[in-house]
Length: 327
Image (tube, rainbow, N blue to C red; front, side, top):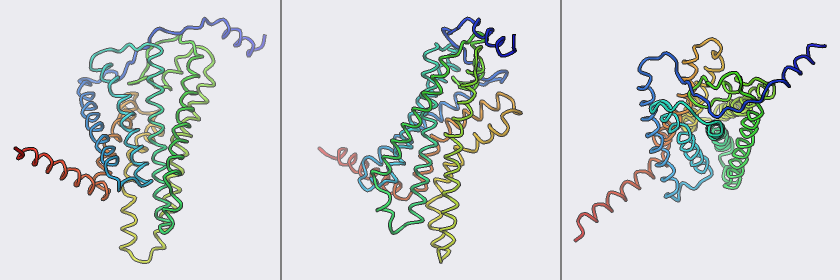
């Protein structure tokens, strides 16, 4: 009997095991790790408040109904969903000691967290496209970048993210988990999960290699290419003052790109040599920190949002004053 046929026979004899639950192990051997999750809770609260505020400002101010701010609104919306999909369950697991999660809940947890994370990177592509069009074609920007175009791009990326993650999660349902039910991560992480499978994990390994290329590789390549084009356009601007002004319009977006991609790049470059706890911390920070920082960056570095926020605060202040002094 050949080796392939022997392996096939052995695989066919494996009893299919679909566990009732998984155990999220989280961090191992770190003292006082609960303080870290309290810190994450604080970040989550700030993310919810900040992104809700950005969405509210864009909704109430008709001057912010441009294509760019449609993309900014979608980024804030996705950040809010991403934080809310992850953090309440993380708090439940690690602060309330509910380490057990049912099979179906785990797959659902993975689907929503992964879909929203993918949309965060795709949103950066939309914002990068908006910036490169605004700088390279300033006179024709409004003709080239319409509301319909931005909404179409956002809808396409939502469809792409949902379809890709459905495939990722769907392939997990064919695995038999007879080795262990302990997931070495702080949530239902795809990589640690599929490696627990007893039967053929080749399709899962293949999608685990393809998904990061689509979610991280292509967006990062597009963003780098966009800024190469922006750099070329800036070099053709005659005055230094105009160059600085055009570059300042990109600093907010560049900050977002750095916040999203640097922790992930660190994990992918050093993931095989760093301690599992360091990997989990890097991934958790890359998941919860950007949604908190995005509103701060856009409020502080975007003049239109700052002006709009000031107007709304003035209206709220005077309204309150009128109600206070009214008989």
